[in-house]
Length: 287
Image (cartoon, helix red, strand yellow):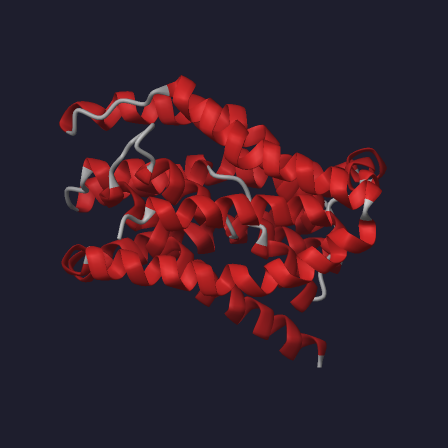
């Protein structure tokens, strides 16, 4: 089974579901409370790629890292926030409105930042793999698979709010089993590579998640943001849209290489484990 036929509908559903949760007042938050929004976007758009590249350089010093994995790691770091972060923020008693705003804003901003950064990354390491980034195809695919579904969901939520709420209640139950199916298919297809590389890639991705969430927490603390805002920033900066990274890696129009998607698969696993532990920590702290 080709994973692209699973990940394409999953990403489209995730983006449509994100649109169903958006309201015009979510974007007013940028003006009403610019500080946490700016900090969150800096963490996602700037810190994540920088820290990821730094970790890659350290890994290269200690041992050779595959060029395909470097592209895959940077692809995850350049992706927008994951829509699951809204659920995690709610569980951690964070600021859900801030979470929704950050996810929506990062999804739009990374339409431009992701191609720019990935063009540089593939130029830096692509010679070893003969891989190049067709930037026009990437922009078109992201517009079709991300912007259009978000816009449709957003408009539906404005004019058919009750219908949007009903659809959202159904979709939020479907997406997690679909992601589990995707991970299972990838594991079966690339079992040997994943098992061989899990120790190093699992450590790399865990360090990336812990470093970026830690930086987000420090920035939020220095700027004296509220506890709810701090919790949301930790989750938002640590939870990237792995489905988008997998789509770009597997797409026949872009990289067409499932090995590039392996870091995103491992990232998704470590991300959920680490942030579930963080949610558990916040619940213990509240008690």
